[in-house]
Image: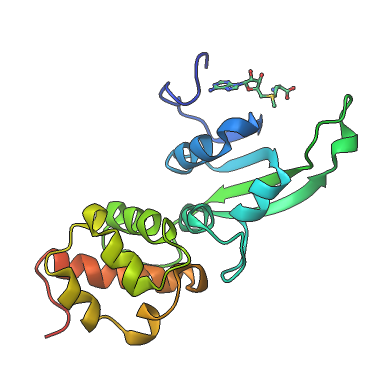
Length: 186
Ligand SMILES: C[S@@+](CC[C@H](N)C(=O)[O-])C[C@H]1O[C@@H](n2cnc3c(N)ncnc32)[C@H](O)[C@@H]1O
C-alpha cells in the first residue's frame, strides 16, 4: 500500500503490524477499527495506548476507549521506554494488541451508537442528561426534553465517563428506538 494512510482505502489484510505515526494515532485507529482484520500489533505513544484500554471512571476513559472496546479486545502487551530508541524521543511508547471481535453488547444501530459516544464524550464532565440535551444537533432526537425525562434517572445523573460501554449502549438503544418511532416506554 502506498500513499496517505488516512486517504487511501485499506486493502484486504488479516494482520497489521505498525509503528504508527503518533500524530495521527486517533484518525488511523478509528479507521482501522472499522476495517475487517484479525490481529493488530501496533505501537503508540504510551498515553494514547492507556486511553485505549482504560476502565470506566478514569481520566483516560474516553470515546477512544468505548470505540475500541466496541470493535476489539485491546491490551497493552509491552511498554517501550523512550530510552529504547536512539536518539531517545520525548515520550514513552506501548505496543498494543488488537483482536477484532463482535461487540460484547447489543446495539440497535451501530452508526447511531458510535455518534452517541462522540456526542456524550464531547461533554464528558456534564451529566448525561445535559450532554444529550446539548448535543442533540448531532443526535437529532425529536422532543428531546421530554425524552430525557423518561430515560433512567440514575444514568441521566451520571457523567458519560462513569458509565460502562454497556450502559452507554443501553441509553443509545433507548434513544434510537424513540427516534425511530418505536417507543419502548409505552
Ligand atoms: C513512527 S514512523 C515508523 C517508521 C518505520 N515504519 C519504522 O518502524 O521505523 C511512522 C511512519 O509513518 C509515516 N507516516 C506519517 N503519516 C502518514 C500517513 N498519513 N500515511 C502513511 N504514512 C505516514 C511517517 O513518514 C513515518 O515513516
